[in-house]
Length: 428
Ligand code: SIN
Image 1 (cartoon, helix red, strand yellow):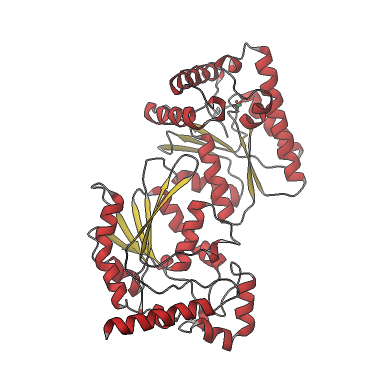
Image 2: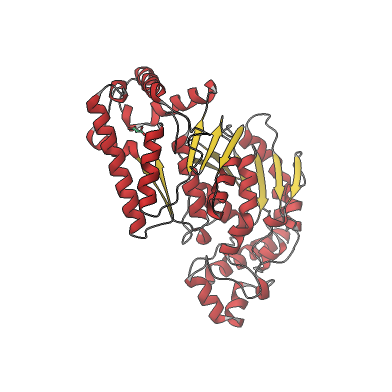
C-alpha cells in the first residue's frame, strides 16, 4: 500500500484480503503500524516527524521487521498474496521494498490511495480517533488534533508514485476512491483481478439486504431445486416483505431489488415498489441429478454422494450439477456489481445467500455451506470501516426449516413433517 494516513489504506487492504479468501486465495496483511506498536504503543505526532532521529530509527525497524516476516511467510509457502499495509510514502522506501521483493522472487503491485477529498479524510480521521489502538483511552478531540499533526508530518515528505521516474513499477493509483484510476505495468491475471476489484470499490455509506424467497411448495415436501411456486405461507411473506423492508430501511432510501430467474424469488419480490432486476447468476445451486429429490431420497439413491457431500460440502459437486465452489465463481460478477452499487435488496436462495453472506462476513469455506439462513427473515448488512454490521428482522410467519445439519437428514425431515401437519391442521 502507498498513501498518507487516513486515506483508507487499511480498509482497502482488509477488503482485498477478504475478497481473496472468498476466492480461496490465501492472503495476509502485514501492518507496519502494528509492528511499530510493540516498541512505541501510543506515539504522539512528533514521533512521525522525519527530523526526529529516534522516531525514524524505530519506524525503519518496524518496516524491516514487517518485510522480513512477509518474506518468510512467502518462503514458508504460507500463501499467495501479502499486503504490506504502511504509508510507503517515499520513492526510496518503495525502491527498497521493490528490491527486497525482487531478491526473493516476489512480484510487487503498489496500490496507492491518493485522496484530497476533505469529507473522506475527515471521516477517516473520525474512525481512527475512535478505533486506533494508538489513541486508546485518550480524549477523542485531542486524539483527532494529534492525528492531524501526524498527517502533516507525513505530508512534508510524501511523494506520490511518480508516473515518469517510477514507471518501472507495477502500480495502481486510486484517486479520490476510484474517481480516477491510473494503472501501470500490470503483469498477470491475479494482479488484473485485484486491480479490477479495486476499481469497483466505493466507500459511500450503504446497506445490503438479503432475504430468501418465501416458503415454497418444494420446501413443504422437502424437495430440493426445481422451480416451484410459493406456499400459502410463502405468499404471506411476500405480502409482508414491503413492510419489513420499510421497517428495516427506516428512511426514504430507494433500493434496487435483485432476484434470481426462478419463480419463487420473483413471486416473493413482486409487491416491492422498487426497480427490480433478475439475475441468472442468483439461481439456486444446481443439484444436477438430485434436482427435485428430498434429502432422504438422495441418501437412498446416491448413498456415496450423500456421504461425500457431508464430508466436504464446499467442494462436493452434485452429479451433473454444481458445488459451492462453482457457485462462488459464478457469483463473482454479482460481488463486483454489489461493490459498485449502493442500497440493494437481494431475494434469492439458501446456498446463494450463504455464499454472499460469507463474502461480507468473512466466513471460512468449511463453515459457510453449513450456516443456517432461515426462511422469512430479512438480513441487513452494513459495511463499516473494519467490519460488516448485521441485523436480522423476522417476519413472524412460520415456515419449515430447510436446514440440514452435518451427518443428518432426520432433523430436516422431522421439521418438514411437523410443519406439514401444522399446515394441514391450519387449513382444516
Ligand atoms: C505507523 O507507524 O503507524 C505506520 C508506519 C508507516 O506506515 O508509515
